Length: 445
Image (tube, rainbow, N blue to C red):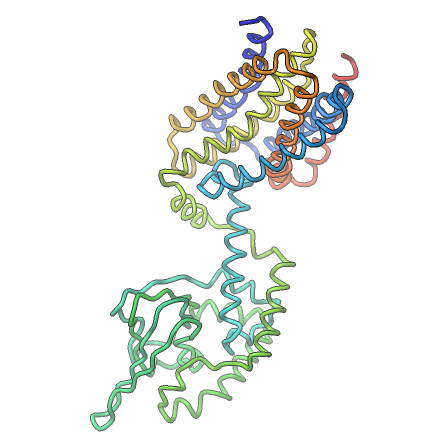
């Protein structure tokens, strides 16, 4: 093995050792988010500078635009696609930024799905479309097996239910001279609406005819929204005056079906609410510890630990390959890129290790993961040197450009958003300082 190959191995291990150091420090104590964000932003700035001057610009001088430009785009596309596949199997748990993005997307999809059904219900449509997203966190998912009772006649009317899937039978038990009346409801139908509006006990019994998935809105939750929205409170009173007297006095079981709006009116409300939801992401933030734990638990099956490992590997391998290949063009070592990788690895492991520990991973598991990544990063740097030795300049430049595209995609996807979320607008200054520091070192070489 050549001296350059051994040097590449050593530099790969050195730059990746920050992962293990950061993991140990992240497990040892809670660090200031602003400090971690500042280091992360500074490291991102140094990486951007190194990408621009050490990889893309020098690669263009050696091999021209075509291999560098095409390689850069390929690297970015491969990273994005691979990252999405890994996150879908639980890899999003490796970083706070990917976890928050996953939760935001899950909540957005849930709200969009709810809108599709609830736009047909008068009580929900009484809520101004721009205020609907405030109700989304209070809508609960619940399941009943076939034969289970959802509520009984005489129970307090304290919730509205929307049928997502399955069928429900509504029974009203009359006098001995009056047989029990039955109505069967299916997906998109609401139950419990009239009792909730009237504030009276249920006038019927709801039984799950099949396995049923329901969305539930409790009366106290709806009251909280009504307190904030005078328009909703007024609309609810109007619904009471319009629908309740005849239905409750006659005991008409068919009247227990949700009051439906004209289709055109429901469609207009749905369109306005969906547009508002897409514009305003305020309801997509502020996740509770329970949400974190539930999503971590639901995705921390057999595939999640491997997905987390593969995600961290995807973030680090391109950097190591570049470290190995960069030694091919000159024997004079330029420390800019290695320093940039070291600075970016440290805060990444520090914040990720602490997050993984909160999600139930043992310290031994966390340290084993990051220690394995250090070894694999060193081997990737070694292979980047050995496999490209003697290769034409266009191939070396193209390979480095592929790695550069993946690194920039990683910075834009997780590192910079996470730094901003934890550190606020001042991280922009730290990013600029990191860029200038790397450029200064490069200019003095």
